[in-house]
Length: 211
Image (cartoon, rainbow, N blue to C red):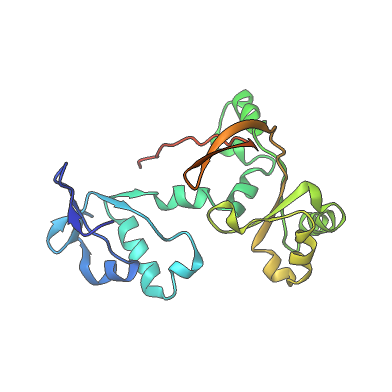
């Protein structure tokens, strides 16, 4: 968020760290969120997706203050957690989708969208996944609980990664079957120049759940 008014729409926008939220924001008896006496309608998070964004309890308290209020959080805490790799892995377990989707046929259609997702904890399933990663890493991706694909580990780098971690630290990762998307030729804009290259596509669906 930026500390200025939108010239076009005349909407006041204020940028705060999570710690500053605790210093400047308050919640009224009716759960409305205020900053310097003005009510806040929407809280849009440009950070909060990595552990380093919460160095002290004050940052956690700032995030929770907004979540407790009537202001629209983008994303809400529940929506935020649903994007975590471990939550996605748990949702892929047998019976989990059915907790949220009553119709069996619809639940099955949802499951067809999943690839294999495996824990890397000290359970029997987690140890099987670890052995699978050591024996056949070329078919897997190791993913930490971080936002974005830049933190992922692929192929022969997976055994080196996991071999250097204790079982406790391995719990911070999941394994996923590698998706081999079909490649096709397309034109890219790189450094101001058009370049023809083989590419793969990823479907991104943009939307928001307002609770």
